[in-house]
Length: 73
Length: 73
DNA sequence: ATCCAACCCGAAGTTTAACTTCGTTAATAC
DNA sequence: GTATTAACGAAGTTAAACTTCGGGTTGGAT
Image (cartoon, rainbow over all chains, first blue to last red):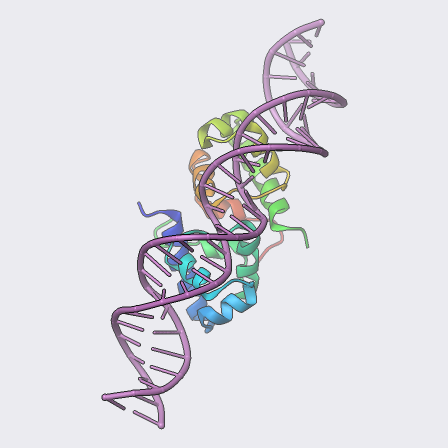
């Protein structure tokens, strides 16, 4: 239905909020700009593979958690 | 310990084998070359976001399944 | 009311990961 | 011996990911 990028972005936004950090703090941890984090959360683009790993590490989560969407098997 | 790319590649290789198709057949379904599938399975690089989605679709799996590794929480 | 923090949202430019295209090698099976 | 499947390198191309500007909005302090 929705793109993966959109769903991933929303999922990231929620997990980051739950973790209690700002886009800027996540950006620093992942070594990206705030704008990039914003773009990723809005589904403008997905992160490249290396940054997927860094994002999961920053939030202290396994990568698969970032792809755990509602309504999915 | 191992890179995400390596673990992802191995996971993909297993899931593809379980699904019973060749690299070439997956490549056709995803609109990539066989060499690219080979590179991804060997962890040379990870797929871009759009192709992540296509790979999961081709194997009729949710994306998160591709990141379900052994020994992980 | 205004300052500030956090974030949204384009547009235009840059970088480099992802991808392709060659070619070679090797194992298995028929 | 020849298909099939896949590993593996190197060199070149493409476009997704990322940056850098800019301006705009919201909500909560002071």
